[in-house]
Image (cartoon, rainbow, N blue to C red; front, side):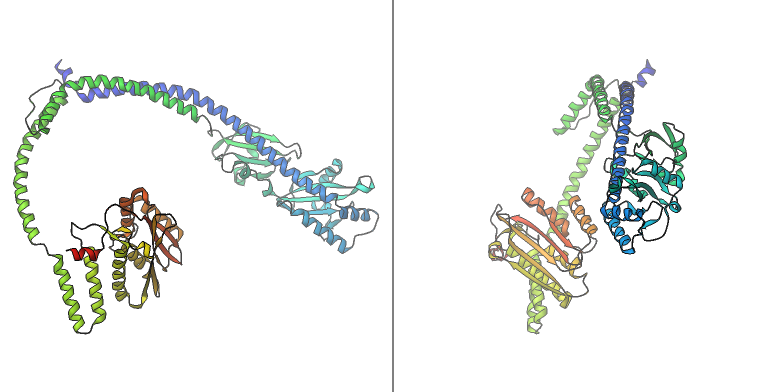
Length: 593
C-alpha cells in the first residue's frame, strides 16, 4: 500500500486518463476515416480521370476540325479550282497566278495560329505554291500520297513531317467541283507540334496534375508533357493501365481519335485525389466530438479527485488576498498537493519578509524622487537662454541667425508641454510649428530646400493632435529632398475633404520616390505596426499611423500613401472637423500663464 501511495500522484492520474481517451479516439477515427475516405478518393479519382479524357478528346477533335475546315476552304477556293483546272487542261499557270495563290494561302493561315504553311500540288506532283519546283513525292512518302487518294478528298492526318520533326503534316486530295469532283491535285497542311498541346487549356487554374501524351498511328509522339528522355512511348506501348515514368506511378487512360487514328493518353498520378475532403472533415468532427465527450467525463472525475484538497488551499489564499498572510495547516494524501501546501507556506514566509524590505525601499525611493524633482531644470531657463542669444545676435547684426534662434525657441516651446496642457491644438498651430521646423532645415540645407504651405481659411481652426504633421514633413525631407542630387520642394496642403465634415492633410515632396516592391513593404510594415526605416530619430510614419488610430479610431482610415518611382511621394490623412473639448491656440495658452 505504501508503494502504491507513492505512485498515487496527480501526474500519473492525468496521464493514465488522457492516455485512455487518446487511444479510444485515435482508434475510432483512424478506422472510420481510412475505410470511408480511401474508397471515396479512389472513386473520385477515376471519375475525374474519365472526365479529363473526354474533355481532352473533345478539344483534340475541335483542333482537327478547325484544320480540316481551313483545308476544305482552300481546296474549294475559286482561284485554286480555276488554276488546277487550267493545269489539268495542259495550260501552265503563270508566275503571277501562282503568286496570287500564295497570298490566298496566307489569308487562310491567319485563322489558325498553328499552321506553319499550306502547299498546293498538281496531279503530277508539281508544286503550285510556295513558288519553288519541289515535287510532292520528294516531300512525303508515296504510301502517304496513296492514302490521300483512297480517302477521295478527305483530310488525311499523316503524322510527323519526315523533313522536320517539329511539324505535323496532313494531306487532302483536291476535287474539282466543275469537273464532277474529278482529281485536280493535292493540298498539304504543315502544322506546328505545339498546336496539339492540350494540357494548359484543359487544366489551367484547377490545380490538376494530369499529363497528356498524343501519339500518331506509328507510335511517334506528337505532343507530350514529359521530356523526351522519359521514354513515354515505350511505356505506353505496353498497354498497361498503370505505368511508371521517372520514378512515379501513373494511371493511364487511352482514347483513340476517330478522325486521325491517333492515340491520346491521359496520365494521372496514382496518389492524386481531389475529392473526399467533406467526408474526411465529417469523420474528424465526429471523432473530435466523441473525444471531447470522453475528455469531459474523465476531466470531471479527475477534477472531483483534485478539488477537495485544493479548496483548503484556496481558502488560505483568499485570506492572503484580504491582507492576512497566514500559512495553510491542512494536509492531503496526494504528493503534489502536499508539496503545493509546503511551497505556499514558504511563499507566505518569504512575502512577509519581502513586505518589510519593500516598505523600507519605498521610503528611500520617495526621498530620492524628491531630490530629483528639486533638481529638475525649469524649461523657462532654456527659453530665457535662447531669448538672450536672440538679443545678442540682434545687436551684432546677425539677423539670419537671430531668426533661426527665434524659430528654435518656438520649436522647443511647442514641443515641451506642461502636464496640465491639452495635447490638442488647431491646424494653424501645427502649421506654424512645421514652418519653424522648415526654417531651421533651410539653414542646414542652404538652397537645396524650398517649401510651400497651402491652407484654406475654413480648415485653420480644425482641432488636431499635437505633432501629427511635423513627422510627415521630417520624412519628406529625410527620404525625399535629401535623396535628390539637386534642389527639392516640400508642399503642405490642407483643404476640406470630399467627404463632408472632414479635412484632408497632405505632405508631398519631389524626391526619387520608391519602387512598387518598397511601397508594398512600407504598407505591410505600417499595417503590422513595425518600422522599416533605420534613418532619423523622429517619431516617424509608424507613430503618425498609431496616433491616428488612437485618437480617431474608426473615424479615420489612417495614413494614405501615394508614391511614384522617380516622381516623389505624398503622405496624408483625413480627420473629422469636430472633436470633443475646446481647442485653444498655443499663444493663447502662453498669454494665460
